[in-house]
Image (cartoon, rainbow, N blue to C red; front, side, top):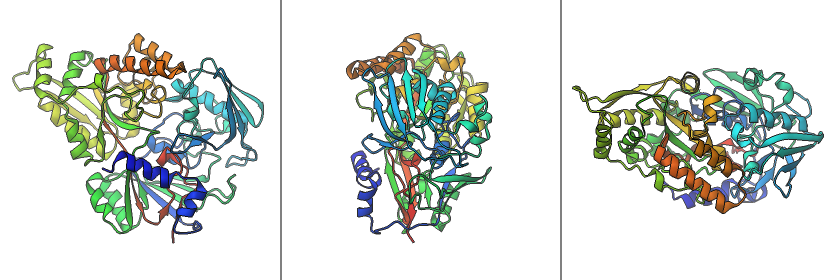
Length: 528
């Protein structure tokens, strides 16, 4: 795997440069206009707008159609998008945004501050992460159509970073006439302000996006169309890339990466995604009596060898995770409380001491493992079944698509433990708090506290961290949180997953923001 610093340097020097600098570096003086870019993915989203479901599959499509107030470069410097200027009051309680004039929704209606107000308040109400991100948002004032003022009850130091297209999409208020946001047809056929128009969603097959001829940024985008194909397995991904039927994938067929890397028309890039900070995470259902016991969770953790997951399943393209707060957030991260090294003897001893001996058939107790769809999740699930079998724990692996996974875990709670894909994001309040936030018990939403962990002390510490403007105190608060949840272990981070992209060499300027795959493709073009 390429060195992390090399990967970041590559992103900073090539992918995320301002347009002029990248034009100067390109072998072609001018982008080529036209053509269809085909993206192939394993699995299909449940919606095309990350308002009620923030899954990565949704974000990667939505951001080509629906925009945010800001985007960020590789150094997390904010750049204008639907907002052209912004300021924050000295007390940190008022964020004033000047909106871009003459922007129209794809149905011709004007974009105004009313849309910003509606979107952010909707995210505060029903967003899987928005309920936490915008917890301190009291109101969005709209003194005129091109001014939006966010009024907060308490300082929210991470707020600007959350205002990207993927994390906080600005949707048309007129497309949501009621409060049943998930029932709006906009989730299935989105209306946006972005560089591409929604054209078609053939369920089980593909999504088609077309060039927006009236995009507010003159001359953009360069592509005529984007086709996102959904396939069932990685073999179909590799075949489509090698034959030229597809141009890009983020669902890299990991066993075949070296072969794909050697292909004369393909390029493979592995890079850390410091906006999403994706990880595979085990979440234990604490409503199950056997898993409600901390020593049992510690035993299960000690039976898992992360080296097998990183080496055999990810072929060296992932890193073992420790804390649920990612290592990239160096000031906040503390790995020590999550030191649960592979030790099968210790795992067996803990279960024996817990009064859970092996039965005559060698089995201690059964568990049902539900996992997020995707090839690496399936392989990790199969490894976990084998690893815990050595401990005498019989694991039934329960399959299903994304909608089924969400229903089983967050609505029906028909699981013992799950293997989840968690975006830990750019700040622990925005991305990690939701793993432990007890509000998710009363108000269930996807990716919010699947464990049903309920610890008032942790809730209080997260509340403090969310509004703390003194960095030293904020760091200490997050370290206190990690000391508690690392010992309680309602969730166990297994591996950190980088962004692995395989693309045809004719694809240029694929990424133009720090959130990589959730960029808008407005600068992407295909060489003849």
